Length: 236
Image (tube, rainbow, N blue to C red):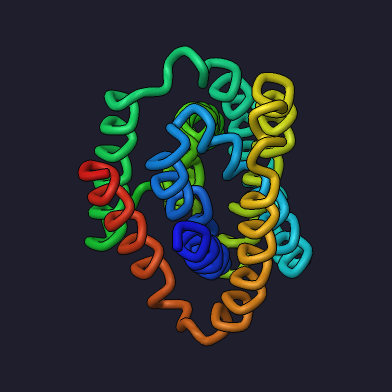
């Protein structure tokens, strides 16, 4: 039964991520943490996350906004590395609640169409902070999507660029997790493999649905998902 729940959550995570640029870690991490603890759950999720993100990026690669990637994205990847290194020592409930508060703020401002716009300097800072929180608590996608609402990009470019940033972050943090907890991950390889397959299937299904969401509704859909994620993190 537990493995079935992990597969369902993995599929749902891949599906949502194809629509909003985040969702895999957000849906999978709490479920895995309930059995394995947060210290192991974060690196467990990182493996299906990097595979699903790579598949999503390949499907949307032509929509990439290179300017956002080279400002926000690079510092987000660097922040993800810092967060991954600090994960074993600093991750905890207080950080999760801080992240939840940030997500709720981002979701509300997006739903009420409060215009946040990032210039060159603020884009670098937003990227670094979102990446670091991602490395620490394993939910980088939500805060990254919240920060990316400050950029004026179309829905396909939004998801493609958020995906590319996520891939950069994974490229920095996954090797750190493998070095730190490789033996533990080998002990749960079967569950990780099942989750990875489910994430890929969900990603492909979600990609087909993205094109059906009207452009004018897209930002509110993303904002609503961010708000729900922030609220859920308070109670998990």
